[in-house]
Length: 369
Image 1 (tube, rainbow, N blue to C red):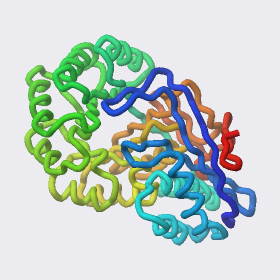
Image 2: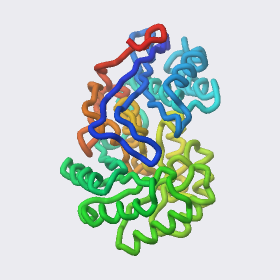
Image 3: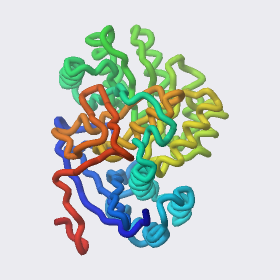
């Protein structure tokens, strides 16, 4: 199974409701799809969103990195030389994590097909069904309460609340949500780097005094403020989860050894794909630190790969935040992983199990068709 070509396409899915965080507002899931073809006719699918303020990658930069730097390194290689291919992908250039992730997802898809096994089984096996939380975008309190109630009606029992715009309003948002639905669901807070360390300690103190019980708080401070993360972790009883602070295995070791986080959020677009995500899960397992598997605002190609990883590493990845496909009005991917509300079901097809993808817009001579 020799790699013969790499092609690109675009996939756009409108959101059911706009996705709002402290950093941005988005109306569509827009994935760059990477299609790796082989000499025997097998195809591997990967994908990446544009996340310039998180990973520094745009669709344009991802295309350039793959087409001009990564592709020449792996064209003609046999998929069975899997580890050598991965070394070439990561050795081709520094950074460009989303480009590497998209290529890796497609390569792991092909690897599973070469082994004739679903990816989660190829990675060690696990449960074929997962339960995800759902994201509640930051908004005015009435709108957030309506969104929470709708999520509960749809079967979600864990809500991830986006905050981080105005600390005093954020506190009121969380109090109102907890009062309305706190006895029905678990609540996770995602601050998206919106507070300082002292603000975080103040806010959690106010919430705890009000009787609010939270499962965790995610990335309250700036990604580079590891000292601030450690201060928060030492001062509060609510578990602190690192997201934007945790890209590489080396960063995760530092976070754990310095006591800067209680939980690590693994995302394939941050880790540059599955191989480093696996390393992070194994490192966390050594230190007995819990992990979450998360995603950017992306569709079911990349999220499927994350779900397969979560199943295979369920001993340490015990929190699932893979609601991206559920936020879209439809899923154009046929076969593979089924996203049905809170329930994620892994298919039995080889690799990612994708059979077809509707509404793909191929990139031909630099133009989206």
